[in-house]
Image (cartoon, rainbow, N blue to C red; front, side):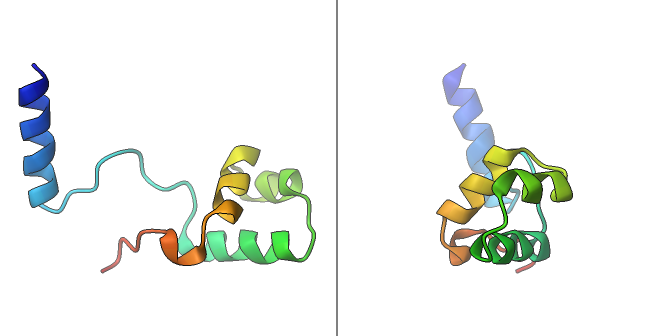
Length: 73
C-alpha cells in the first residue's frame, strides 16, 4: 500500500502539483505580518487581523522571507 502512495506522490510531483494544504497567507499578507511583527505589534493581534492562528504568525516570522515557496513561477 505504501508503494502505491509513493508512486502517486512521485507522479504528482512530476506533473508539478504542489502537495499538502494551500498556504494560509498570500505573499503580500506574509510581508505585512513580518513588517508588523518587526514594528513590535503583538502576534495575536496580527493573527486576528489576518484571520489565521497565532501559531501561523509565529511560524512565519521564524522562517526567512525567501524560504516561502513562490507558487507563481
